[in-house]
Length: 315
Image (tube, rainbow, N blue to C red; front, side, top):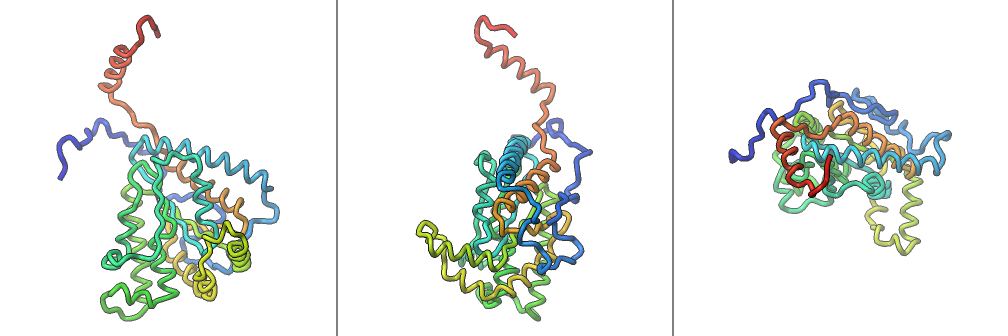
């Protein structure tokens, strides 16, 4: 129940009719088309051969992160919109490192990071969107999902035995389940976008050869042992099934209000710059603005300034 003290007078609410639309996603060569034509076998896992040097990539990342930091501050002050970043990938693709690199230096008060692993018994007693719906970013903040509700059409599709734990109503076929879940995801994301949450989703596309090298390093380097799980090797056996699941999910859910970007992940510096650029351009397109003050508030500020002026100091 609202209290009268929670209402914001209309005169304090500032609308910008010329703002860019949420249905105009950032252009990028790695954006997944909205017409269902994405083919994962044709999607790059490596950057172009004529790409920038490591030194240039380092400088680019620093500049992009600084720009994101500036816009995040304004977004936080505006407190009217939010941004959700979804990261999905095969093991060892670089999700954790990319999240750290892109968010380095940002105000922690304006970011919310959540990692979704195996659902709990309580979570399994609800619909598949329930646990992530509770973790959506608040207005003014950037939310990051390290894995997400997409696990329900990725790992669960590759291993449909997990559906037995969810005690679902009767269904005609597995394909019916995936079809309905894609529909639910599209509707869910469109609802969030209409309510002020901008959504961008990243599939960090690593090749099986590069993943194998990274898993090998986790085994051979003692400081990386904690990252290794024998389940990572077991899941490699389902590579083709996972690629089919990713292709189907990206085609079914890449939409103007929640686009997917398939980012080459074999080269981490290149991948991180691409992600940072898309985040920067998206925040810029959201056009956050510092709140405007009413005439009464401006008059009050002048009075407060005068009362706090040190003795003897003049304008």
